[in-house]
Image 1 (cartoon, rainbow, N blue to C red):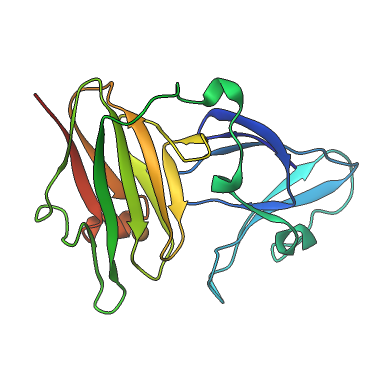
Image 2 (cartoon, rainbow, N blue to C red):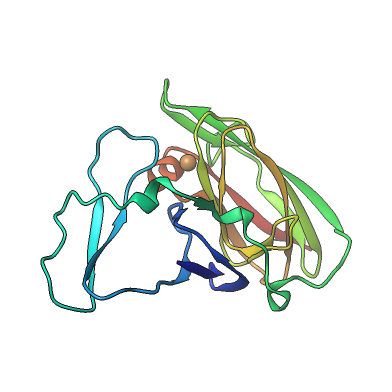
Length: 209
Ligand SMILES: [Cu+2]
């Protein structure tokens, strides 16, 4: 398949066998099918059990694949979305950041407690920005799990220029994300695994005068 868009923004079309998608991420893919009935399968990452989701794409006659079909592509080239390259039209205009903020993902399964910047939502300090600023958020995942980080009200650019609104952060991974503060209000930044967000992995982004 060929990935053409990430979170609605065009990317340099990229061929892959499969891709890793986090909660809240969206990808557009072009799939070229032969003649028959084919399984489209999603499996959880890092779980020995838990089953799989499957759809059948049919272009011709023949028996449908069974519910346990496991296409070999799932163990082929598996794309991580943040490795995609942006299409030119998706890039933010080049600009130095006016302000920076720190965003650290913290917490663990034992005890089951998640936070941002060292405390759960409600006890952590909101990030702040002024209208019109380019804000650079230096994000670090200090946990041993992967978290899909989602920003409300804005989209952001990774250092590659890739434009997204939700990005998977691997354990101990860091990167800067840049956003233009062009949507005044109070917004949430949260892990898109909602059970983590409900456990405290959220922080506010507030506009100040
Ligand atoms: Cu999470």
